[in-house]
Length: 197
Length: 197
DNA sequence: TGAGTATGTATACGCACGTTTACAAGTCAA
DNA sequence: TTGACTTGTAAACGTGCGTATACATACTCA
Image (tube, rainbow over all chains, first blue to last red; front, top):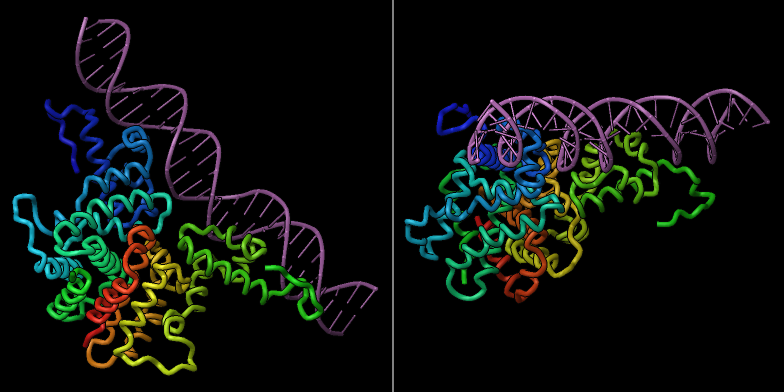
């Protein structure tokens, strides 16, 4: 992450520094979870000074909130706003493929990784709760037809979160040996059960 | 937790103190997760001195390992060793009822709570991994018939873990309003999909 | 009973953390 | 160019933590 010095990019650039801090925080939170990322590590990765975290964001918890606010989980699963929204019957397979691909090495959605790695901390629980609802449950529920849309979306979210935890702890050895197609099929069935009207 | 003074119970009792520390640690870890339980809180709850944690267990992480070793998740779901093991087709409903009951206020299995609250910490990840396999995946896989027993058990474990996280963060407001029977049915379908041969 | 051991206590060490403060250096308008 | 403002830096503060040490008290048994 080199910082080129150009006439258009002054040596001191509040917005650029803010953005570097935000991206560094996002990456580190996704990798280690809120509790296990010191603000000094964020600053070091962003090549910025520690004090700027508090100056620009107020606190570590507030920075965490801004990171979540800048991420939307479903947009990354289902493509940008240009694409048409997937039909409800496509949802289970799309979600299953995302989980299966993660297990086999595809990069994960930062928001989901951040969430399933940081749920333990009571201090940021309200922040996590709000963004889980706004970025995961509600958009997913809007894609569903029929009653109990939020409940069904929540059930699917439980599978997403649990898959993250299991993948990280039991991890690669166990799940990667499984036949990828069989794994995707099983996950599809699980999401189908979670999302069914 | 009063300590009665009897001739048989000397005022100083290594085993009793050890047991009190273990139980206090189990309860606090289940409530707050490994990271957010200071050893001083464990000692206070056990009415013991902080130094005894390290004297009797070596370290906080080792104490955590002993807590996990003293808990078996499935035994608590499926009764003691006296009862006959449940048939495979009963498993989804039994697991679903456990999750649903937790949501509606029933006391949770400490091991599951400890796990889904502590998965974020890399220091104790090998400990968590070992006990998740030994106390959850393997016993569950042994109850299953057909191929891929461990993979199917792992899929069910993902639902269990994810339900814990979702219940704690999104929590009570959302899920408790749901019809208990409908919730149990949906969870049963999800576990069925996870465990199906 | 009294020495030796087991158990419990009080306290401090050393460190990492989030945050704050005081200051330096760059930027830009007048 | 100068002076006010913005951005960045260095260093410290205060706190809480896991752990270690030195000591006190209770127990055991020759």
